[in-house]
Length: 127
Image (cartoon, rainbow, N blue to C red; front, side, top):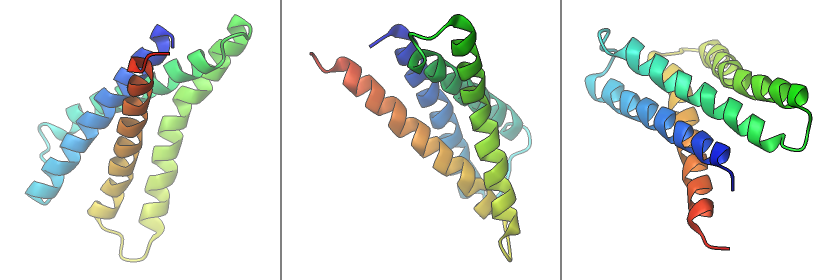
């Protein structure tokens, strides 16, 4: 296990955790808190994009630097792509509501958090 993989897992846990907290607050308040929501979104988004890039870089070891950089950028760009496609699909549903849109964030946060925990658990296991 490399340090890059650990950094990617930590970044995924940070971004996923931020978005899970934001989602819980949104659901509890029945809507957005406009003073804090943009900050929480951007911080979580940046952490998840960084996690994607770091994981792409780590998975492409053994390739040339240019190929690794290209793979890292493409992996990082997957985060906004999944978010955009998920939002579009959520708003195409009949009777779309803000909660269905925010469900995309919560699903991405859960996936990122589970992946980060799995990587860190694998790192802490001897052998």
